[in-house]
Image (cartoon, rainbow, N blue to C red):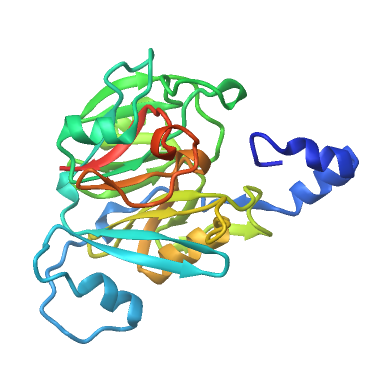
Length: 295
């Protein structure tokens, strides 16, 4: 019921009443709070003593790379990539150059923006799952400017974005309140996975099924996490909301949110596709409207 092409399989086998019962037993209740920016305190580490293996992976930087570290992720039935970004001031929202008219592939946007890292961001108006990715859902803020404002995707969550102080703030609020908060780069999507260190309540798989996934988070020390999980391929079926939350929590996220997933889950580093996109277009990519980039 969470796929775009195969819902008929469930309706062939089960009654509407039974399908609704299953869906009600798989849902997510988000933490009803707004991220507290005072809890994010940027740190520079000198210690070589780590609390656990996950902290060691994050804090033990590559010798020739102070900007980011790529970490492979493996779990029961899924495989993917986590990117630890050490300088959140370099994270921004990029959009298709033809916003509202036509989406663009992540490779094209990455090249134009001279992005070191690019990942898909919010959802977009996609009737029959066959649009050109032109019109993003919700309010989009890029470099301090509201560049798009369309209907909310109704996916839970709310604003996901960075303030001028480079802190990731999650909060369900109006566009006017978001401007008051001081977002410099933000989208609207969800659901939220962790707010102020508290996990959302997830029953079953959260109601989103198992699929390719993307998520974003920030640790209390300011390090940002980009997460992309492969799905719909033999080596990686995909992840559910519990998996995403577990991974983000293991790697120390204090605030974390789900991003658009499925055929939109894409990660590019230095112009190279890192994950295995499954949209079916060239290189498995699809045209989209918003992207998180690191410049």
